[in-house]
Length: 231
Image (cartoon, rainbow, N blue to C red; front, side, top):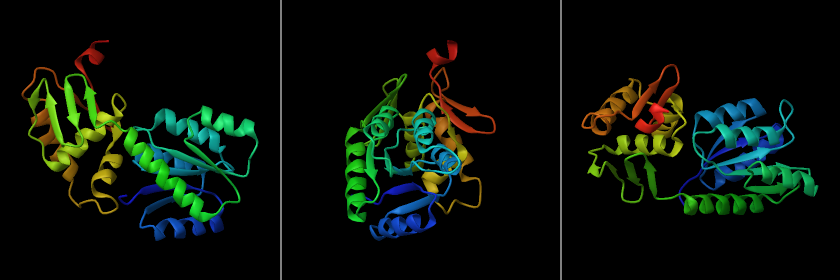
């Protein structure tokens, strides 16, 4: 399995440090939030392979964080809940608002690793290799894109940006989320994204009557279909 990018939302610094060490040992990249609102912001701005979410947060209930991530995040990201609450009613509520798995404290770190692997693998299998947005069709496995059955001449980065926007559609994706998705924690010093967006527009919109790539002022970008625009 490829390296995973994981968001850990846990307010206890000792537990967070221990978990991060185990996860790092697997070669996974870990982003850490010690408060619910901070974790929610990260989840809405970036794309993670998996979110590990403690329910007992001091500023906002973890169930509320889960619900908002599932409702507002640009793509569906699997969420593994960590909690000392083992009542069936709590589990039912968690699964009801979109949690993908539930692990009660205390737990063995190796069990956490196994559950993370299983969740990530399941999510990858359930993610369709074909994405359709209006007359746009993307094949993720073949890394090809067509609009109105015409092949789009995309660069590798252009394809990744378009796929990210298509997965999120009709929701917009922030500039910061795109930049982190493409370049990680080492973005280029110049505004490279602007150049790639320009090239993407030339391939996606210029040959066609109706544009799809829309700029959202002070936020980012969005794929919009002509039918949605006229509603």
